Image (cartoon, rainbow, N blue to C red):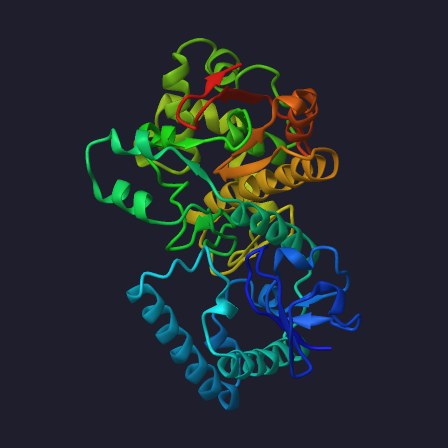
Length: 400
């Protein structure tokens, strides 16, 4: 049975199904099975297919046939007009349910068109081989999006005025990730999201925990460790750049020089290609071995089965390493998320920043810290050394 969610906020429960608007979850028909997009209040309803995940970021307009394009354009124009009028009227759309702000007749028309699109996509586009993984990530990111951030406005006003701070002051208190925003699978944020991925480190202090403190867990030298893993080499117990300094360069460089040389060589900087350091790294790391394993001359397929089309040799290693690192981070975050969702009533993942996760930690859950660290470090490429930091704001994290 086709149905559509009426809002994706966790407090705005409602679906359109079989010609009716239904707002009581106990009255949702048991047969509902196909819809456009996941909403958090659907987590416990099994067997639902989400058409948006079939597209994996492709625009609706590019995926639907001509006979549906006019209907989609008509309802899209109407919904844009509603959003503009609500903005002009200064109605906070994040604090109100969308279905309370627009006419019922429009909701019905919009949902009927979405039903037609959902039905077409599920019938005519192959289900992604990695659908289950995509759904789990979608669910985790939706949970993060639905939790409001605790922004210290007094601290915010203490900074010199700037456009980004004005945007934070008047903008969203939610992080809205786009899991399909890049070719490699690295997360981006939506246009009106809180800018967690691009926020200057000194501005991060305006973000404070809902519970007692923030705990950040991140990989030590994630990309270097992924390359070691792809080559089947053991993971060093120590800091990976110290390992390069001592074991690869035999102490001839400092830690910072080793780090700079490694990344310059990894991503093909001309300055290092024919240097002594470049030759040493080439002997230790067989880049061609990795490229030949995961690049067929035009496309990359990572160890996690992610396919990236139209890749030349110059960019192949970059895509292999970045994509594998991004998905490894999400897979480890899913483990920690499951731990907190099933065993904690208070603590939760507040955000994911590149290759780190930030937990909003209750002091009642301090006993979960070691378990979360173990889950994060236990990867398919061996035990990764991790860094952990804790603090009373995101900008005040101290390494443990």
